[in-house]
Image (tube, rainbow, N blue to C red; front, side):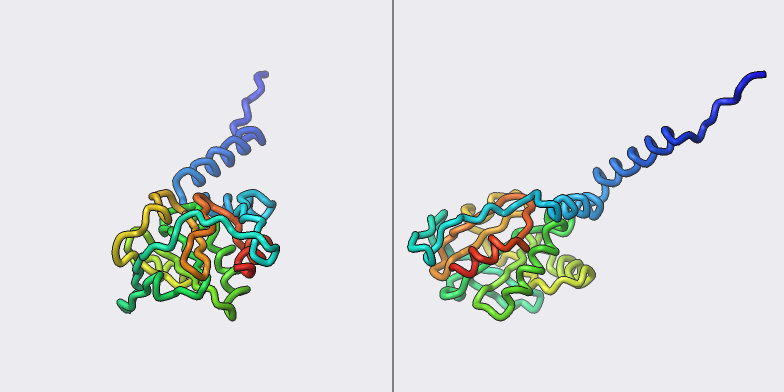
Length: 197
């Protein structure tokens, strides 16, 4: 008597799950964002902030001198970088369809909550210029991050086109930090770096 081949085996099911997961990661931004976010939790995707600061008697390296840029919120209120002098500015250039952007948003939100009573300005700049869509995305995820769109040219030193890109400006408006790609900003080193500014 011939043995019938089993169609449903552990090996076949494992392969099917692996293929479905791989396809999900490739084609669904939220799944890829979740995967990157999970890797952040185990210590990958560090922001690599400089270890120097005025508190240690050293001068931070200026990556780019102060430049003007203007951003706009959903109500049409404009915010210029020159108008924010005297404050530390955290700018994140992102888009709702960008998986690495989605992955780092929880860490940016956590950092902002830690600094909400400080003199730090957070600008989440949707580079697609779709304020309504990006603001709805933030609200839907429960983030308290202020969304802006560019109201003019963005200095190339700040944003070269890759997302996400994060820059930090010191109180004089000089760029002292830039990171291209996803990073975990809810890191004690990032908080310490910003507090030194």
